[in-house]
Image 1 (cartoon, protein in one colour):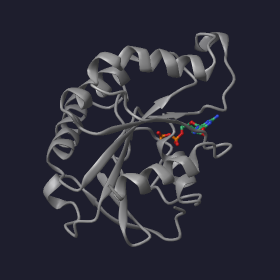
Image 2 (cartoon, helix red, strand yellow):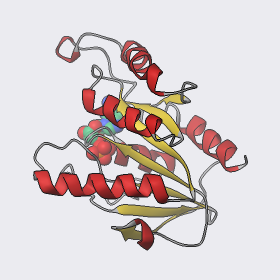
Image 3 (cartoon, rainbow, N blue to C red):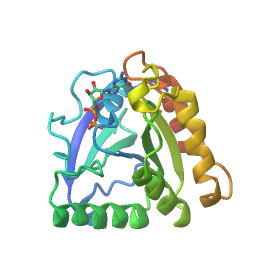
Image 4 (cartoon, rainbow, N blue to C red):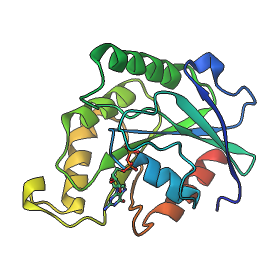
Length: 202
Ligand code: GDP
């Protein structure tokens, strides 16, 4: 399930503008600064595939990367970046929701959640929206290498992960699959790729 080829294909603002070749795709989404670009780069074993920018909230489009010429990784705008103007944020919201609801080749949304900090309300809201709309979701917990810190609530990543799972239980008929990851140690990378391969073969 390794990535042997990865190429940036296009940035789209609307669902209709996304690639139309029918290849299956997985969308990565999460709060700004959750570690999405790092994870994307770790998955494809490159330093800079993602059009990263140090400024959170910069990637405002639906970015398609074709993998092994047979499926897509899709980078969606990060949410919850406070410095983005309100209307702009509303806009992303509208177009990402439209994408989730109408993109027929979307196999699963990979919702990234930072496991090094206590549960955030905005992540719960996102997960619950996906659950209520019956959009297939996989939970990717990021930064699992980080040690607990008092200022971060003093909990270990494992504890933050189980808190999160407990809090979203009511939104899903069956608990979504979940994977603990770190872009520093590459924990979870092979597991994610294997999971994606399994989902493609259903
Ligand atoms: P994005 O805004 O979601 O794309 O987040 P980035 O990938 O740019 O990462 C945000 C910050 O978190 C950066 O300072 C990264 O170095 C750090 N980071 C990302 N992934 C990890 C991880 O797995 N472990 C640790 N310790 N830090 C990470």
